[in-house]
Length: 155
Picture 1 (cartoon, rainbow, N blue to C red):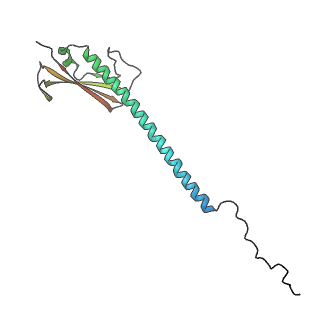
Picture 2: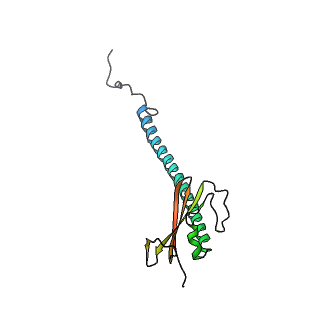
């Protein structure tokens, strides 16, 4: 049998067409997606913690302001009597107990200070100036504090 030039030459068999993904491609894709999902979950957890702390700080500041408003209703001579006052559950500016806020504590510290140098504490029973600090805690952990000064009026 002889072949003429007119007959088509033999062709090599084709490689089978590639369909789908290889195991390595699927594994790499799974790792990339897994890392992305893990990062999003961690971001969500961090955001939640930040929101909780922000809400806690806002509540603490409001409770400290309640103590400041309570102190403003007192005369200067009555302020030293607030030293070491502790409210748990906390109180509002009228000294009404906020019973739905268990776990929160307000502690008041009143110190005599030199009216000309407010950073200097004095051991004086009849001061001309006092520094009042309201420290707010939740479940034993300090949340915030607020400090202000009060001065005796003219003699």
